Image (cartoon, rainbow, N blue to C red; front, side, top):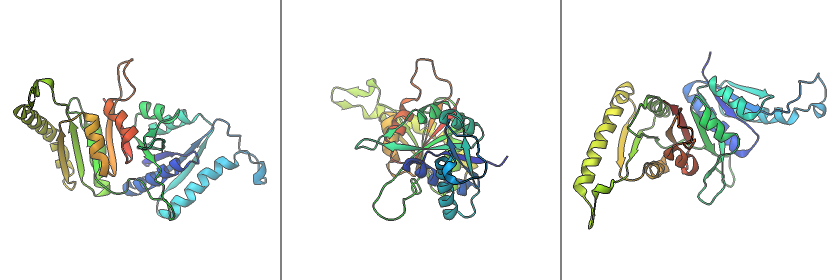
Length: 291
């Protein structure tokens, strides 16, 4: 089966921004782009007749308009449209199992442009077995709408405990497809023992940084060899992991964070780094499930 990127469409500016981003990504990777619009109240396909009696007219128009725009921008891209008479969450999770990634629009609501994750986005994000990318609309007066996250390095957040092959595989592949550098970021809070009455013990923090830098380099080395054409920059920040990652993503074209597939029953659905990233990062955010 040909690799597919699926984007969820609902007619909003955010979902159209997601579709534009997904089209760029599909073209880079030579994948098929699937435009999915799911609505439980879709009617059975009517016999031939005037558009005004077609109960699915507006649903078809959402997909048709997006497909026409994307094929005009990307003439060689394979774009297919899907109308599904299902709950959007269920349809997207099913599509995720058949896709390389799912791309969803996200809406800024606050002065700092935090993401709004609604009834559909959050369950798909936390349950999908494949990467989910969140894209917000960029608005400007006049001219065609820009495609979010088309420039800048790929930033990947690494915790350095537990496996991270799925995360690094996605990040390196994304950087290689874009022809941009990869910046690997590890944030680590300064432990209490490093504090003294007169400030921070710099010998202690230097030792912490050296140890983390070595572990970060060891994690990246096999991937540097596998992707020799990708320029890699690694960075250890003595700060909370969430703050370090969001801060480093300011100039990024894409931020890649991980999500553990299996979390304790009472634990938050996302870890602290992923939670902060999807709410506060300004660029598209890819959340990659891993063991």
